[in-house]
Structures are given as C-alpha cells and as structure tokens.
Amino acid sequence: MIKRLQRKFVVIAAVCLLIVEFTIIGGINGVNIYQTNKNADDLLNIIIENDGRFPEFDPKGMKHDKPQDNSDSASPPESKKPDKHRGFNEETKYQTRYFVVYADSNGEITKVDTGHVAAVSSSQAIEYGKSVLDSGKTSGTSGNYRYKTGDTDKGKIIVFMDCRSDSATKNRFLLVSCAIGAAGYILVCLLIIIFSKRAIRPVVESFEKQKQFITDAGHEIKTPLAIISANTEVLEMVSEPNQWTVSIKNQITRLNGLLKELLSLAKMEEEKPALTMADFNISDAVYDAASPFTTLAETKGKKLTIDVANGLSYHGDEGAIRQLVSILTENAVKYADEDGEIIVKLFTSHNGKETDLEVSNTCKEPPQGDLTKLFDRFYRDDSSRSR
Image (cartoon, rainbow, N blue to C red; front, side, top):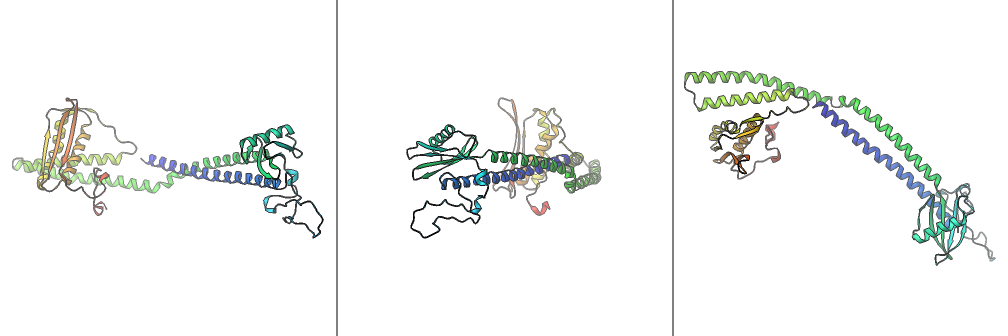
C-alpha cells in the first residue's frame, strides 16, 4: 500500500509538472512566433505604404507628409516615414531581402521588382504573384517568403519578404526550449522520486500507528471474548443450552472471525489476499450467517424470515459469501421500518442453472446520509458517531 501511494504521488506530480512545462514552453514559443510574424508584417506594411520600397530612415520617427516650405511649385510627394517603434532602423533597408509584384485592377501582372533579392528571378516573381492573386488571400506564407497585398491607384501591390532566417531562428528556439524543458523535466522527476518518501512520511507514520492500534486492540479483545465463551459453556453445563446461549456462542464465533480479518488487514501491505475458491453447501452457509440476526430483529420488534432452498451447491469463497450475507442482513435489519419484515431468500433460477440471493426489507423512508456508502463496512450515517 505504501509503495502504491508513493507511485501515485510521483505520477500525479510528474503529470502536473508536464502540463506546466507544456504550457510554459508553448506560451513562450507562441509569443516568439507571433512577435516574429508581426515584425515581418510591419516591414511589409512599410514597403506597401511606400509603393514597393523602403523610405529614408528618420531617427526622430517623424512623418513628413507635408511639404517643408510654403512655395507653390509642384514637388513630388515625400515618402511616408515609419514610426521608430515599428522596428525600422538605418540598416533595415539593407538587411531585408524582398521583391515586389504589381498588378492592375483586372488582376494582370504589369511589373515586378526583384532588385532587392538574389534568389528569385522575374519569371519566378510572376509565378509567386499569380499564385497569390489566384488564392485571393491578402497575407500569408509562400515557400520561404511571407507576403502581403495592398491597394494602389493603379491596382494591387504584392510584397514578398524572405523570412528563411526568421524561420530558422524560430525552429532553433523551439528545439532549444524543448531540449531544456525535457532536461529540466527529467531532473525534477528524479528529485520527486528521491524525495517522495519524505513527502509521504507523515501518511506512512499515521498508517503504521493505525496498524499497530488494530493489532493491539485485536489482541486485547480476544481476552474478554474467551471469558464470555467460557462463561457461556459454564451456563450450558449448569442448565440446558437454550436459544440465548446458542446466540451468544454464534456471536462470539462471529467476533472471532472479525478479529481475524482485522489482524489480517493490519498485516496486509500491498494486495488483497486471494479468495479461496471451492465447492460448498451455500444453503447451510446462508442460513448460518443469517439466523443469528433473528433474535436481533425480534428485540427491535421486527420479523426476519429466512427462506433458503435446501441442498444448493456453489463454487466460490465460503467465507466471503458468509460475510456478504451477514452484511446484507445486518443492514436490512438496521434500516427496516418499525414492525417491518426482513426476508433472506436463496433460490435457483433460469432452469436451475443459477443461484440467486435476495435480501429485502420494508422501508418507507430511505436512511439519511451518503447512500453510496451504505454497505461499506462500519459505515455510520451519524458524523458524531464516526468521530
């Protein structure tokens, strides 16, 4: 049991750690990819706004959309200057590799500009442009290039930017973060395994004290039971045996069986003991297990009827069957109505191929408490009694 508890602790901690690592690594890489793509889109917007080229860098981040003098002479409009927070600097226009495709309002390509890239020819640029125009998308990725479209007075402009270095950086960052995360996960899991015994030590100590208490109490209870058994035998020697002395002896036998189970439970560490399967007379077993409750039912003003077919055989664990009948009958007597009736019935069904056990009682109102635990051993619906 202790080893099973330790394994559960390690597994739960490892799963929680794995979820946290996935969240952190996924979040970091998601933010990195988003920011990288946003920077690329910002540069594409700058090129589109300036008709397919980078403007001159303005260190102050000012936009010169108006003429600098008040003369009436015609002058060409100045390029739009990007804000400095958009990642544009003195070297951006020399570091960025891109090409531009121009198309008219009918979607026919009119011009290409491949002067800022070496890996793409004019014919390849036309193919890239046609592919984007046919798809109808305004932005996205095509091969090693991230593209974006814009509208001009003469039609459309499509700018393709080489992002292979950004893609390589994103992939390296993903691999490195996953490798570091995996190494950290293995290291923490090893630490959890090493220190798990210390973490569950209070539970282990409590469990050991509980086992010791059960063992001590079991041995202490054996003495009064032996005295009661001896006194009962003396009473039967002085006077004839009667239903009361027989009932006392049956209950002593039952208590001895319960003590044996408690001691076995205290010694049990990992798995439940295997059932002893054998053929036995189930009719006698059911009757012997249920009959002691007749007196208990009568003292409470209730009637217990035992209807057991004679001579039925069954293959199973006789002790477990007796315990089952005892639990069902005890609960039926306990929760039956006043002046109610309890019936324990054993019979054959389906042409004698199956053996059925039924325990029923009259109960107008269900008992209070958690009904799912009603048949748990030693369950009490009164919390004060449980404490």
